[in-house]
Length: 206
Ligand SMILES: Cc1cc2nc3c(=O)[nH]c(=O)nc-3n(C[C@H](O)[C@H](O)[C@H](O)COP(=O)(O)OP(=O)(O)OC[C@H]3O[C@@H](n4cnc5c(N)ncnc54)[C@H](O)[C@@H]3O)c2cc1C
Image (cartoon, rainbow, N blue to C red; front, side):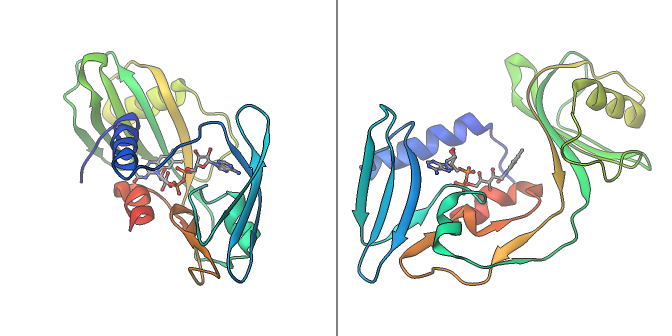
């Protein structure tokens, strides 16, 4: 498994797009899509507020699993699991002398910490907590919960601070039943699932 911070992935993807002369329009919002027999028409608003229409032979939906393109194209989703909340993840800094990467596995939790930026003591953390199953995703999530969990499972105060991202995951999974559909192709928008082991981005690219 290759572990790199998200901003590094963005640099790689941006370079690749540049190599292939892909133009990127930051701040553009796509609002509607119509797939016709011989073309696809997309309408939206540009960063400067002006309205635009674009026509192409095909379209690739890169607007994520909750994006509007797969909905507008009418893809059917098959949901493959009962939704329960099982995992938290975060990117944060560490103020304790703990050797990273670290894996803790006992009856209280499974915790995996991997390095992100050494000089900022920044780590990526994933944790499954036996004492806190099925917490609704909407429940606010603070550093105290992460620090408390780490301490309960490891017996050490990890002193996590400066979080960049804290997120609860469910094990909900689903995938479209057919793709492509007409002139619309899907990437990551074709499925949702727990991104354990870095499967999310890989599957999207494949
Ligand atoms: C907290 C978290 C942690 C994760 N960790 C990992 C991991 O460690 N490894 C891994 O492989 N995967 C991970 N994943 C999964 C991974 O992020 C996704 O699989 C991947 O980002 C999907 O890529 P995508 O391009 O399909 O969609 P996204 O990355 O969601 O990108 C969609 C983009 O489209 C834009 N957009 C949406 N609607 C519109 C619109 N109407 N007009 C214009 N733009 C629009 C959005 O702003 C966004 O920039 C994680 C996911 C989450 C939520």
